[in-house]
Length: 175
Image 1 (cartoon, rainbow, N blue to C red):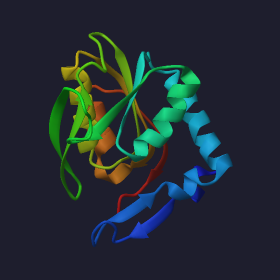
Image 2: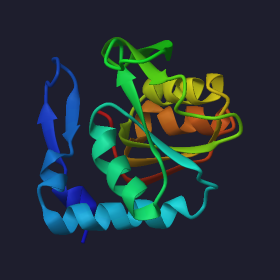
Image 3: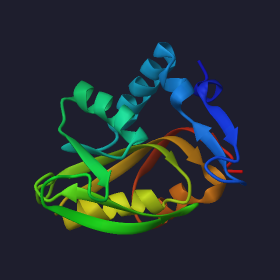
């Protein structure tokens, strides 16, 4: 099974010039979704994992399933003002805008090894922001696993240059 066959490409979304790689077609197929989770779990064995984190919202789909299967706590990195308790916060740039994400201050303890899972990496802005939240919380980023790497946009390369370990399941050209 080639997981690339289950990704829908949507031109000019969310704005003109962006070719959006849509994972909804992958997760609606039970066999493709199971294979994706199994592949993420297999790749996770390369990392020390105390906790699993994901960025809102599509990353939650994969990370929650992996967290359940590995019996590890799941940490939600959410958009600004979505978490009810005290948070750490960081701003970052996206390929087509800017955003803020937050984490509860009591989610990650000093020294926790945190695996970050997300559906896609483009330029790496969201991924770097996720690492910043883990690190200001006292945790250590053990690595990243992405379902899709838009290889020509350089996000994975930037993370690797910054000293992070990165895995992905499939690659597409960004544009």
